[in-house]
Every structure is written in structure tokens, then in C-alpha cells.
Length: 321
Image (cartoon, one colour):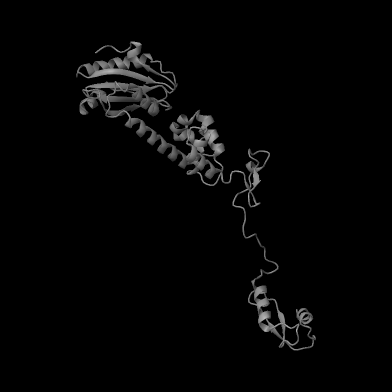
């Protein structure tokens, strides 16, 4: 380094020098004596150069860029397999995954225009945002809809079947159960403490919301007071895909506990076909007989299917009280 500084300062190589060793790199610099002439450097300037050199990494050190992409290159980011082009160039000229900024754009569309014009997979995407951060969840949303048919089927799907779908995580199941709870509470609020017979359509809509998309049978009893106001709604039993155990004595006992004067029976058929089976008819006859002994009226027994429902009273299967 002595020759380098001598060439810059114009000093002769034989001129006495002082040696300085920077803190970290081990490089040595030759500092000439007091500068003389217009081409000389002061000691302060040389010390500044030494300090700068000390901040540089050693020649053998491996370095990385200060700012690296926060995404991980995967097969689905390749343009030939990814809808949208894999990596795209942003406004600042940097390359980034095509879905960057998609979440915020989708949220703004929802907030400004509502949900009516949005396809189901986009609504499901927004639900998945909070459960699965920092990845493109559109493929998972579409897989869920393909597996379970529609949003109703996805929201009502049991955990075991949900977890079979590629990309699922337990937090998604939690989010779906929470949405289901809100839907049930909102539908129930429209019928509870209201005249059941005069608001029949709302009552059936509530039953469909709660039961139509279940994959196992459920038997519910709606308890009415003397004015036919709905005072209680309870799932009396849970069953399998084609059977649910029902105990007439328990239904009568509960009716007396809530001071009900009448009841409406409701159960679902996971197959989607609401046609009553022979077992449904016989079980209904036993409940009617048990209720008649304590002067409780059975207004109807409704079987909920995927799209339509079947009323025992309309079909003539319900014996008059």
C-alpha cells in the first residue's frame, strides 16, 4: 500500500512512514509524514479512508443483498402453471408473485360494492385470509367449493372431511364454525318469540339454515306456548347418515318443563330427498300418541331436504289431534 499512497501524494518511496492497522480487516496503510504540496492528503483524510476500509467485509466473506424477496419460489409461481403469470413486475420495477396486493384489492371491492356481484370463491377467499396468512388461498377456496358444492356445504362441513382437503389447516375449521354460529343466531332471531304459524316461511328458512346441509340426521323440536309463539328450539337427538334415535317420553317431558302447549317436529335427510320413510311415519305416530295424553298438540312434522322440505300435515301422514 506504500507505493499506492506515494503515487497519490507524490512522495518518494524512501520517505519515512507511519503504519496503522484498522480494527477489523487487518489491512495496513502507509501514511506519509506531514503533507506538503498541493497533491498531499491530510492525516484526517487518510484516517477517514482507513475507517471506510474497516467497514468493508473481508474479501473472503459471503455477502447477500440487503433486501431479498419475501416469497418462496415454488412450482405454482411458474408462468406455465399459474393463472395470472407467476411473477409480474410491480410499479417500482421489482418482480413479485402475481397475487401480491390481491387481498387488499378484494377487500376494497367488497367494502365498496358489497357481496352481490362477487362469486362464492372470492367470499370464501376473504374468510380464509385471516386463517392462512401470506399465501394465495384462491386454489383452496375453489377446492373447498368443488368438494362440498357451495358455501352452505363448506360452512356446514364436519372437521374430519374438511381436513381431507389439500391445504386445509385447523384454523379454517374454527373460522367456518364461527360463521355458522352467526348464521344460525341471525336466522333464529327472526323466529324466536314470534307467532310460529303466521311466520311459517321464516321458520322453515331457519330450519333449512340449521339443518339442510348437515351430513348426519338431526331431530329438532320447536316448542310453542298457548298463543303458538315459539318459546324454545332444541336439538332433541343426533344420529347417523340415515337414522336418529327419538324418544317420545323425553319430548313430552321437555314440553312440560317449558310450559309448551304445542310442538313442531323437524328433522333432516342428509341424502337431500325429504320423502318420509316408514320409520319416520311410525315414529311420528308414537310422538303424537304420547303428546295427546297430556293435551299437547303436534302441529306438523317437517322433513328438511337439500332444496325442498316435506310436511307430514300436507302429505296427510299426521293424524288430527
